[in-house]
Length: 519
Image 1 (spheres, one colour):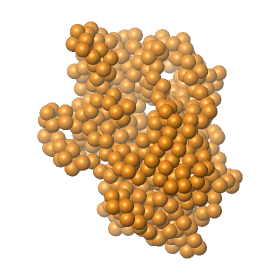
Image 2 (spheres, one colour):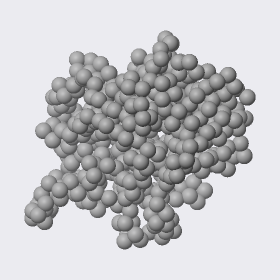
Image 3 (cartoon, rainbow, N blue to C red):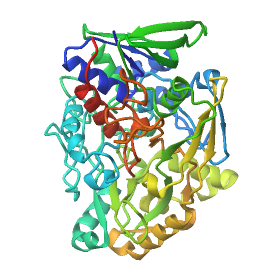
Image 4 (cartoon, one colour):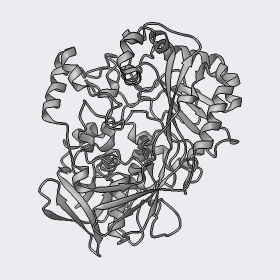
């Protein structure tokens, strides 16, 4: 029996690769799902749109420490506090998931591969991943547009969905296209956001209505989640899915691997026995399982993070009536910055135009005075963009993660590195080139997120050509194991500055496709 632990993006990509090789697999997973009451509301919306029903699936993003919910539910994070005690420094934000589909249930859908320069410090070149980007994009949707200046990151598929930009995004992209000959020498690349969204209808399936609900959860469920692939996998005769399983430790012997686990709800201890195991539990839970399996209690390992930050900008050219515009509210565009005098690696920015969360934030700021100022805010909203930025892990703070001897408690401590000065220099550089970019950055409103808030983290057991007890080989095998492969971001040698999901899936597919199988 071949086991996969976890149903997130790396888990389903691993399953696709193994099934393509004719290998039967069993996936074990905690598998927490959206509440039935919410799912029924969602199902009814897909039959007939009713605004009063749709409102019940919304949330205000400023609540609960900016926790992003899915359809107004915190189910992606449920049960974690019952099975894992997290002790962390105040500047660390740790929200792992036990959901079916993992954190792909709440991601932003930005879907871009790494380029060669992004993984210059990895033990293999981009050519190792390129065939597997193509494999993943055979079952993962990709929407892209004509505005794309990035030659270093190919599309890797001809099966593209298209989408319409917001009016603000059109203004921005047209401006940058008009100035691209001057932007490139200053280290800027730009383009339409590449999104894992099935915007256009296929075979009678729902399509995007540009309702603006993306940040709350798509009512038509056309934003990709690994749950989509899992539903397809469950139709395969060689695939078995078992939920409500929480894995704690792996013990390898000559014949296979003993999987120590418990039932998620009852707590009853369980054991599974596999010839081979692929660990895809997400970077926090996979690190915890590895530390226990290697008996590395109270041994801190470095968890690398891509620093996340946000700031408002204002277009030089205004549009009108953004509040009533039909649009999607995912990223509309991206900008990349290469400036070696500031950063060791490229920075990545995702551009967001109007969404209803902006008004929620203004209500929070002005409180009782909001009714007095709301009409005066209309010209502001007609020009306002939000840029969400990410730095490479080499330019970011990280944290040390350790497992205590109770096998339930993890400690997270801030690693000694400060990104503040780099962020100030980025702000000055954007301001200097504001006319070329077409927007004015308001750096005084910069929000620097806590460590791990980007959800782009990993690298605690990095792939390496050198043997080390806190490393893996190029196929994700940890020190002392021959039948275990770690396939999620836990094995990334570093965390580049942009979307991580597609590359996690490509690397997982690569490992599952190229490793030896023990029958």
